Length: 247
Image (tube, rainbow, N blue to C red; front, side, top):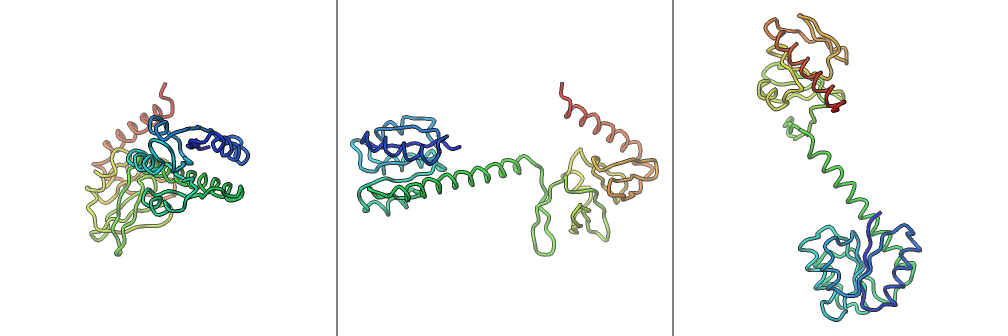
């Protein structure tokens, strides 16, 4: 649930808006400010801020401009008795502009809309963080750029100067040296043949001639690659064991 701030120099307005928010979202975390200076001095801030424009001292529009310097993602809703500031509200990317007095239904609509936007941004940020922590390849093929995560790959092979990525949901072909791909993919993949690179997690069993993968693929094992593969596979299994049981 987002934290919600209310800034207004009139105590009754603060109380009224706080009651409206609690009525609509009982579990809301509220912060009340009676001046622009109080908002700017609060280093923690809030996710959503209902902000009066006309206030003694630092007015709401000035507060908004200063907030945008450091809190670009904060959702701002202006409260005012005048419509003349509406275009300035666009300049600071306000979510909405409520003109006093406003119907309770309209306030609820704006409040819930602000909460939805906050939730959507949280989902985007979570996805962004998840993807940024994952290694990924950018494959250029047939005029398109396709993002591929290593964990989607079962194995890769070279055929007619092209690399073929064998994935669970289909194959991708593009021009690439297998040695370059091996370097990009790192220690979770092993070269078992001059033409084949396998993801170690997908290995079900192996012998000196063949690597058997979970999708029933059988990959030839080059004699000179066998000893190195065995060592790399055992190292991988040990890493995974420590990952699952760090203590």
